[in-house]
Length: 421
Image (cartoon, rainbow, N blue to C red):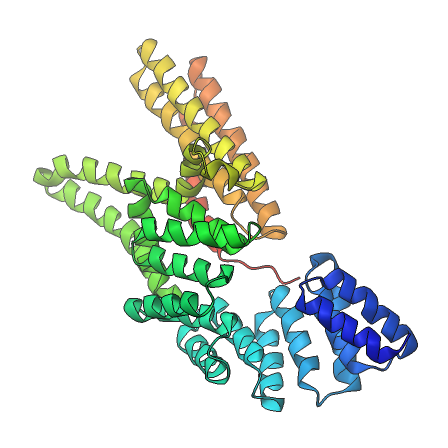
């Protein structure tokens, strides 16, 4: 078949979001002309949609660059694949080379903005998206990155205005409605966010960005979740160093408060309730998503939104809490108050590693978290069994709580890891 016809068919299929069929056309083309650089680049873009083909896609993009090093599409294809593989610094270098070769393609600036946003370089992400919109004011990818960057930079009103403008320009765009939803979420307007996410899912029921946003928006109907979400939205706008400063500041602040209470007994009555509130807030912040997703299972719309992974997480968190409540009540009936407190708290604390196992990136972070969860679960239930048989449980429980304390910091590190594929 004529190579030009095969190329046109592939380009049409790509525009219709049918990458598998486009890849078939491109492979036919390359069997006739193996040195066609554009075909290699387009094939890399098609293969980037399937994580099982990411390594082959990288090779196709590199071959395109080898055949045509001055073609911007070749470098853009490599940047796209590297971004999917979480190799962000290398992806940024490639897309910047694509922009150097051709600075009139808004898709290049949208990709650069996306990479910069994932690196939390919000000012540069805003600049990249704005440059893309100077070329094409209606480009959805640039508009989405620009709205997100404005919100993260604290320019909430500008972000809302941008999101509303994007919807006005493209009322049938699921991406525009979803970005408006996230903008409303970050500004505390969860009911308006629900309307936007619902419209985005009507336009594209498979849109993951809108599905995740709708879950967050529905959970924000509950005051406790809303408070935790707003706190982490506030922290999320800060740099990594500032985020760790807040986390460590709260931890050492509580240690200082206890030290002062020991020196000044008049403070003692206030330390316990403050400590309990701090502990409850920390625990809720760790397990808020799977805990409130459990309630979402009974929501007429929300029950259709949860993935299998989210359902498993909510199930296990609910089981841990139920075991804790049942065990605590059992020990109270037996007249063992200290044992009842331990029976209640130990399984509840286990929800920390259990929930984290479903939130970390796939690969070695998941494996490490699962192994740690198993070890802590063994310690936890060993302590519970010793309590029930009146055995020597304090040593095992102390070791278990030490493990939970260490994991409270290690878990935050594991959640921040992105695996390079």
